[in-house]
Length: 308
Image (cartoon, rainbow, N blue to C red):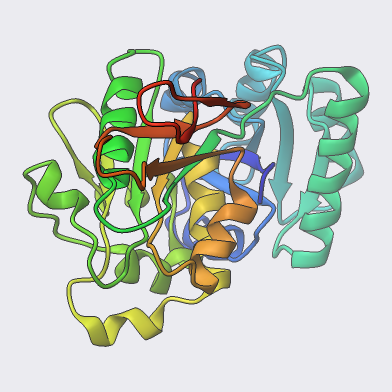
């Protein structure tokens, strides 16, 4: 899930659009960024969401759909896919000439759709138009309890969110004792358990609605409220959730537990950077430090420390 294709869909037919949406939400290789029911609004939506692939249904108004494809073909390197219940050769030719990269016949077959996305992804890489969409994942771990790893994770997240060019998510993975929500003084409506149970049906809008936004701009996905919900979240769920978050945010900060459980190891496998917070074992030195670079020796207490 490190790399996914972001999609935008336009189809005035609500039933067909819902059917397509259900199919797309079950695919790991794509992320439904936006959907639209009006041809005249879709270009603005595409400019805002900047999808990798735009799927345009032709049947409701073929002439207007062809005009839309023509206007979108040079938009942000976006690849276009035309959809229709008709397999008429003339219609296919018109769509290809207008700028469609692929033409698929409805109802869609999942295997055929995945093959089309694979061809598009390969073509974008070959042409150099593929864009790096994966956000950076930073895991914050503590060498013990009470060393300030949650404080560091929260402050790193808020500091990153202070930059308007960043979108940042914080995930509290201390499933039993996590208190990132307390640090941020928020009362979340949904938790990691809620999102992991519905992740297959999530789109970009629903994912953000399932998270709590702090006034700093940081989005929080807290631990489950009830201990019995902890068993509902597995390692694969964590990987899936982090993959979707990385596809949606520029930075994802994960506050690990101190048990280094299977969930923590799954998060570490998805992390691009790991910050390990520790403290000196000497009573004379109560400071804490973050191990990122080579070790040096502290003159104050003789313990080994590291400085970034």
